[in-house]
Length: 307
Ligand SMILES: Nc1nc2c(ncn2[C@@H]2O[C@H](COP(=O)(O)OP(=O)(O)OP(=O)(O)O)[C@@H](O)[C@H]2O)c(=O)[nH]1
Image (tube, rainbow, N blue to C red; front, side):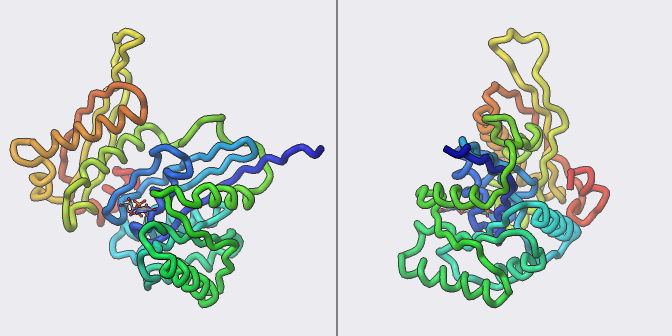
């Protein structure tokens, strides 16, 4: 009998905004790690989900959507994406099966083609939203896009993260592409994102719920302080979180706060519940809205907000 080899490594899902990357990460890891939203471009922080198996550890790096940069923030995000691609073992490009392959996908695959060494996989996401005929057509288009851009797809895999279709197969295929190596993280750890950044993302997700137009891109959240309150009995801990929610303009501040603070209260309650569920500790959330004028275009502010 030969001893089973252990594999470990990194994979990153990329794709145009809303392609289903975060949802797929969560489905693979089996818990809510990366935030998901029906609004595009909400994933800014690199959040890792870790798939633990007896024979492997697969670390998923969830990157922001790559797009044609229009602001300084956009450029920084694109740089972040490309440096991630060069460092991981596999990049899996997500193409939603319910939408046509478009210029956005072509742009990403062309950029990815410049990163030579990394293994490339194509994932047709959201197959529950497409007919078998559409899926077949979609897979052919993905193959054609590979040929056109000089990309060799190691695999083309249709999945539905929501229906749970083929998610396990995708995990198996990705694991098989990882190099042999020891576990990289302690058993059972699902993410190494600092708790502060998880909390910040959950607050941002709650704040994005129901807002329209430009506002989603204008919201940034910074957790200023996060600590267990002192003097509490051991079986009744309380986590104090002080966070600032930044918008770019005074007018946006009013929208976020709402009539007599009603909207901000809702956001605070929703975020608190999510954080409590995630960290398993009762939370006191102190949330303030501040204006950081045009922060997306200002390098100093970007640094302060963690970009
Ligand atoms: N029906 C269906 N919807 C899905 C599936 N995967 C994702 N979605 C939905 O598609 C939307 C976008 O999914 P996300 O996972 O946030 O997409 P993303 O690629 O991470 O988006 P960005 O963070 O903007 O880059 C959400 O409303 C998801 O619920 C799927 O397999 N089936």
